[in-house]
Image 1 (cartoon, rainbow, N blue to C red):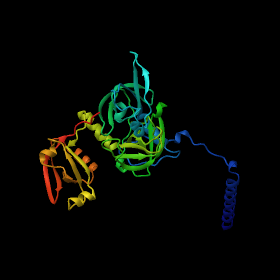
Image 2 (image 1 turned 120 degrees about the horizontal axis):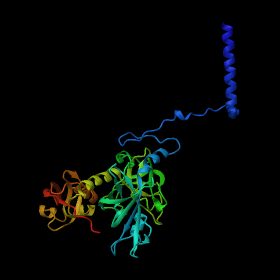
Image 3 (image 1 turned 90 degrees about the vertical axis):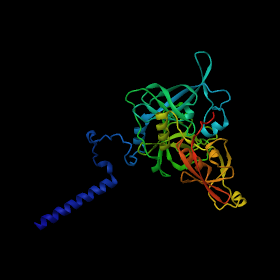
Image 4 (image 1 turned 90 degrees about the horizontal axis):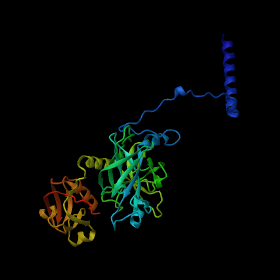
Length: 389
């Protein structure tokens, strides 16, 4: 019995060794089985609150497949007022990457400018997110879905200070994108930009998150951009920035460009900001922000030394609007604001954001340093006036 087992073991060893040699030197000699279609499993749609999924083999095709149906192309016919900044303005071309506007002949023989952009369907009721500058001044807005359907869109509301606008269309069986969480993004994460650049049709580009929290770019009043090197071009404005799982993490809004094309520096509004603005626009038709009526400057070491201040952090009040909440409370030019409603402020942008977060007509405490005195003023918050066109 032992002899038989020894012969069997040697035979198996020889056979395995032969298979190894053939698989290494002549793999084509071995038969290859075909996967039965019945073994393929369809992947269900990803809900908004699931964890991050790894990208499938073959790149980001699954993320593009999930997100692309909800990204639409927007055409807005406009009649811009005379003297308003348009696509021919150098500032707009520099920051937005805009081309000179295309003109079409209208029925009455007059030229009508058209704005081209993108949008994202975010609810089954037909609400879309896009950029305010895409639909600003539009007389008529038309949306084309990825499946070829078209619909007239109504403007629910627009917030130029964040460059977010909300549209609504009336169609059945709308594809809806899953919403991600921009707070989970990290520099280096893979992202896709989906939109309609140069009106060539829906296009997907890939890149990474290059930076977070970009501000002081002079594009919007309230800035907290996601920077990406995914190619964003004119026409991508209002389109989707999605993560590797196909969830919406931002609304593409601007590029840094000297030629009008992508240089690998694009900016997107975080989806958290866009969602807050959308909720306010749908509920009230506007975004109500706090306002106290002060003009501010950075607190410099020279000012601290000249006035012998005992603090190093704060925001210098350079001017106070007459009859504004700050003036009524007793705040004066030369005061240094250190806290707003308990929130420390160290820059004019932080002060702007802290005040804007206050509810109009509410009471708030503002702490200031006046010379060697520490003072606190109670004031009734006003409502931030709309930006001038």
